[in-house]
Length: 308
Ligand SMILES: Nc1nc2c(ncn2[C@@H]2O[C@H](COP(=O)(O)OP(=O)(O)O)[C@@H](O)[C@H]2O)c(=O)[nH]1
Ligand SMILES: [Mg+2]
Image (cartoon, rainbow, N blue to C red; front, top):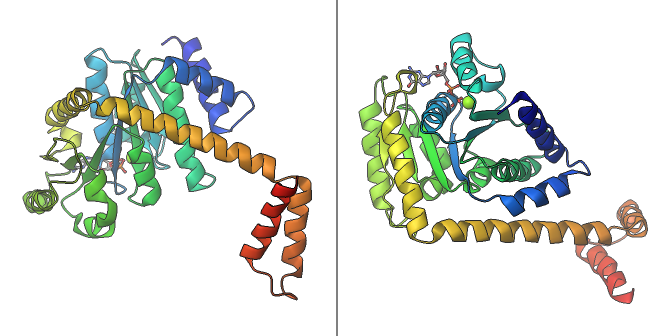
């Protein structure tokens, strides 16, 4: 990309992130030309080596001629100047590549908003013709699961000591993960962790309707060990999605979610007139003295909809 193209793209993304008036037009344009990129979610606990892994994978995709974008939703990201010098140098080398674009997302604001903005930024990048979008999300909470699910494939990165993390994550982790990576397997306990995960995946091998068994891959991201295997699995997964029409249905589902969101927002905006807001605030002020409930207030507000 030329520096001018990079600047234009960065500005578009900022406009989407800030919901500026131009955002809608930009997103509309992106949707019309996009939806071809392979979206890869990388999730897992802080410090597991997600950024290091993303760095390796992005280099490989870039080497294979793919236009590659990285979105990092991680405040401590080495991509943006957090972290230690050695990590930063590695990531900087990536950012100078001609076919690579790196962007980190601000984590300010509501988490729900963050997940929505991340989807929108993916759409913008997709519209710009990127082949690969790598999305790094830190942590293992519900919102990360949300963001990870926006991807076509989800890689969960754990480390030999992640036993407790699995416990904490177990609600969603087996369902959303397509590929497990046990990173830092230069450390003690990697083999036990792999076996542990393998037995869990066997128990749940009907985790989805896809003809796919969740692989558990050992890696040492700092030494680029295991990267080729992860890369191959990602390719196999993409081929599998396309062969089974899941590629298409994921995109239809995404389009549907976006339409629902737009309708919800439009209805809510038009509903909350000054008058109704005033009524609500007034009721709240009075509520101590009366026996009003939220159901009753909502019912009265909605009934004004029928009367107009
Ligand atoms: N020993 C070892 N250290 C690693 C490995 N992968 C990453 N690291 C280091 O672990 C730290 C955290 O890595 P990072 O990629 O920022 O983790 P993230 O928080 O999951 O994105 C960094 O200092 C890395 O250099 C690995 O496989 N083995
Ligand atoms: Mg990181």
